[in-house]
Length: 320
Length: 305
Image (tube, rainbow over all chains, first blue to last red):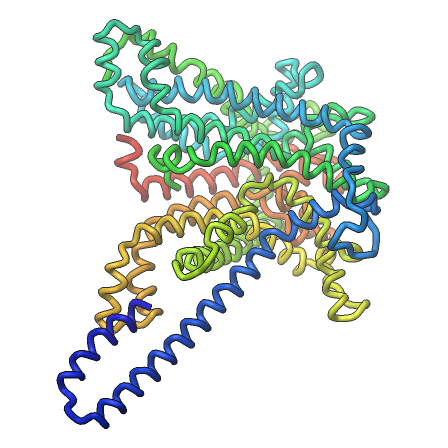
């Protein structure tokens, strides 16, 4: 758009002054108008293409979600039925009622919330105190530990999954409190990243703040807790969100550690969902309703916390 | 920097140190230790066997290691190329001020990002179902009742399926990253190139793209590493299958899935924990060195300051 604007504005006055012959001027005008029309057509074609592309991408992005929501509102068609439904025949909330009453859905959600909440709180505490020490204090082995943390971050817990199993067995958590054990594993897996992220954010806060607070009589802990932490809220929120989201969907370790009881009420929801989908008798509507219910908390958390995302992650200097 | 007593420094570090020592380092150390033994499910009283397990993975007869890593790298390359392509295209479209209803398009295109991947993987698995999945059912409306893509049983289509799902899940991240970078490109630069007579492609190629690279490069490296370790999405959809021959890993058995299936017992009666541990150590060495390299190539000065 800006291209033909600048050119026509530029050329017309020049040619006005230059051409004395009216016939030549008309010819010139026709040529310019033709060019503008062609450009407009090209631009129109371009934006039509862009709209087409955006529409296709939107269908791609939304189709799975649309499909599962419409199925959750539909009747209780079997998970494996041959007729295609793109609109629910008789919209009702029956599937949701069923999901809440007939499945151990609340137990799954409770278990998952426990695992995610515990790992987030504990992970945040460990990483923010550690990050503070790494950012504010100078001690021998500081650089080495920062580098060691980096290498550790490259180690997916999944690689040592049987070792984790023995560790929980050794700590007596495997049978008595497997969910606690699970959250400890998640917590440890995320501590490294959050520590780096929060440390990077602390580094951007001037150390004079701490010094001023301590001159005013605050203890070291008060300085950390009352002065530095509130200022680092975006980084803390972003780290907490990442730990929470990471634990929410984790499947591999949970599947290895947790042993389902008869109705599967001691599982996290993702294991429950897999169980539900693996069962041929499961009506598709129930599965869909369960999937929607278990997604909602995470989407809410995500929407709530995403405004912290940009500053909390980019200022922290965690890049690649 | 603050001057404090050494005991106080330790106090701040202690929670993290304990966590890392007990929950991170112990299993890694144990895995490393296992890799030098002959521990199997049936061999409780195991002993040191030196590098036997390592030579097992590198022996000429054993092609699993190369096959699995090669397959994973192929997956990474295909996925990353598509992330960049789709991310760039969507970002350019969303950066076009002439398009009406930008907030709507933006929100709609970012939806896959906000959904829990484990659940959407299960949904996609159903969408890909041969007989009952809506993708094949919609295809049958146009192509006749006998048609259908064997998403889960054909090695090629299974690979395509997990690529599609991963692109669906990951392109919004690239859209956001690239859109952010695009919006920080001053429009004067494009106009200047315009005056100099550059066409749209030249403007993109020589003005926009170089300015996008600092944002795209770290996102690409990060994504390559996470895609290499991809587990949940692929496992929930294909579980590493389909397996075409008994002595070859399945078509979507990427490194993590390969290890996981081995530990769960696969079809072998005796689970060879020591060999699996060795495989894990090898993968760890690869991942650790790649991470370390990219970090030190990046801004090591800034991060370690």
